[in-house]
Image (cartoon, rainbow, N blue to C red; front, side, top):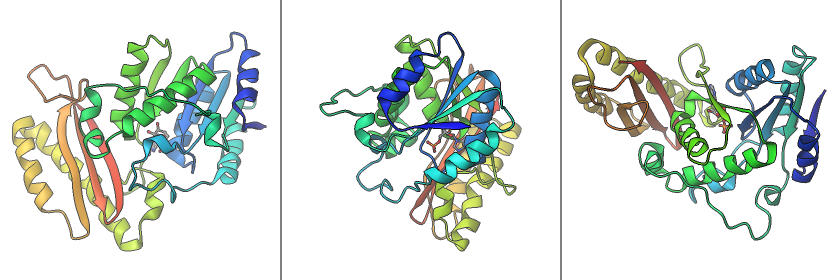
Length: 286
Ligand code: AMP
């Protein structure tokens, strides 16, 4: 059985009684798909106790973003977690799904956790305040659940780097584990936002991963300078109804410009398909 917890006080109580058992945390905004489930499965494999949090965090949405439309499907989410849990009957699985924002941000809450540098590029430059919202909520979730391991998807690679930085800087003593991107057969990364796409938009959405792959090909063949030039051409080719927010090749470790010392590249893109903003990336050894 999966135990669903709505109140922070109840979760704190449960956590206190867990003694030394290994705890894995999977923070999500719900509307779970196979991408999320791959993180949960890894946590079930590696920990006695797993906690999946489901909270659509208002602090990480900008004023013109999709906070109100974001799909909330708790009942279905719990069902698919119960299905997955059947394969791990000896492990405990909790869902923490606060019904009220005040469970996470009680009255008077006035603290912001913010990582510098890594957050001023890629998604950070087009979504001001987004990463401060993410680090603030993840810090809170860490404080409530006190995990040994926390699982994040490469789909949000910049988010992973920012959380890894926060965890190291604040000496939180939590292992931050990166999990591969789960994709549809045609390459589109699974995302809760994919369901906003109409049929013709779904066709254009493939263009994001296709372009990243073309750049990967050029990068491995011709090196980063030629590949960076190619980005300009690719941006101009984008089909009607799509618009690049960014498309860049960076050093994957530092999210900085590539140098001769770069050990891994990250090719990261954000594409608007009409109003829906999709992100994807490829991480490649240099
Ligand atoms: P979200 O619910 O969008 O906040 O995502 C929760 C976690 O699931 C984050 O660590 C995401 O990176 C991860 N995630 C989302 N989509 C995928 C995917 N397609 N493959 C792997 N992980 C994913």
